[in-house]
Length: 65
Image (cartoon, rainbow, N blue to C red; front, side, top):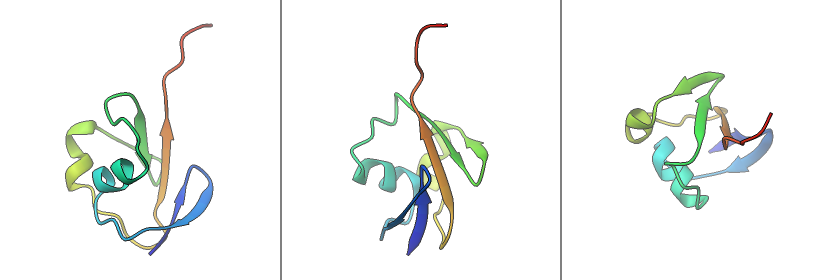
């Protein structure tokens, strides 16, 4: 399926958000994630299903001001 990942179109066979993030070698303990502009708590990554055209945004916290 085709999805948007941080503004880029990508193809994936992953079914869950957790599987997708792991396929991208993303440390799920160190990022915040939104699906279709809605924040997803880490506790729901494994049960958040991906569908055609979904938009995923992943950000890492930064220190500073």
